[in-house]
Figure (cartoon, one colour):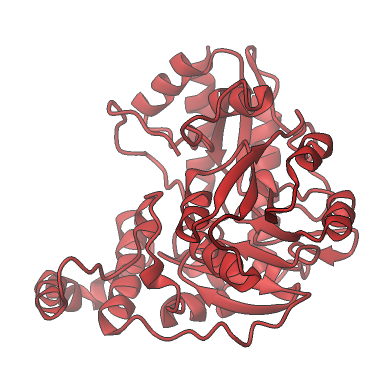
Amino acid sequence: MSMSPAATKPAIPIAPILSSASFRRAGFAPTATVLDAGEARLVTSGRIAIGLALREIGVGPGDTVLVPAYHSQSMVPPVLWRGATPLFYRIRPDTAPDLIDLARHIDGRTRAVMVTHYFGFIQDLAPLRALCDARGVALIEDCAHAFIGEREGRPVGAIGDYAIASSMKFFPIYEGGALVSARRPLGTVALRSAGPGFEAKVALTSLENSFSWRRLKGVQAAMWLPLKLKDGLWGALKKRRPAPAALAPSSSDSSYSFDPGWLDKRSSWFARTLLALVPASRIAALRRRNYERLDAALGSLRGMRALHPSLPPGVCPWVYPLLVIDPEPLFERLLAAGVPVVRFGHPLWQGVDEHTCPVSADLSRRVLALPCHQELREGELAWLIDAVRKAAA
């Protein structure tokens, strides 16, 4: 995600935050998640799950891993950590993998292919699954944008040898990811707690984030003393740890870095508890509703259009992606107005450009995505629509 130095503090939350409404279940139809696809291990981020998947596959020095040219930079460091070489394949304008270009990259050194369900829209992976099976290559299903959803009656993540996911993009938590496999056992993936400092930081940071957006006011009042003592607690814990160890992974603060020290750490008790208590059915229903509200109001504005013209059944969107003809002026106006904007794949990994994949370079530059998460209040969603319309005028 790219941000501008001129950006002001967002006026509405860019990611889901915990509220009393987060736990409501009534009135929402059941929906599948990536955790329904197979055996799962809950870790601290999607990139840690990628590293674990590559380790389980046996990727090592001299191997290659195929990565979509339209990607988050956080997908590449786990490949380099294994000593392997990332090779970038093309995607089509609808974001599906270009199977001809992908097949051209497969040779005797290829150990795995990563494929992404961009923005929560679940790809038809049957052709790619057949190609990987025919060539003896493992398939890693990147569900970082698609923790919730299904296609043709199967939960997202059920096609790959491994699926990786990012729960903190969908649930009101500070950290969280998953490694899932419907095809291979995960018995060798043993996880342990990252310690009391990590557990406390995740819980308190998640709650503080909620309080900062005027949610859970009763809880905030009851916790004034623990929050007041927090800075002293962090200082004491850091003194007991060898520098420069961190209490939480950098992925929780939007860094692209990869720290293999978190590979054997399980997601926090707080995050795992909320994952069990916060209903995915509510998340899916409200995200779909918000996406459709945004699309009706913004999808036909001059100079832009929705990247996806329809919202298929079974899709739980991560964000609402707009394809903008002249993105930079609009991007700056949105940030100046306090509108939180996601620019997935901006920038791409060094050396990946229009020569690698014209479509990826174009999407990296032109897609401006807006939040559509379930914790947007009615007034916040109305403000977002109004602010974008004014910026686009």
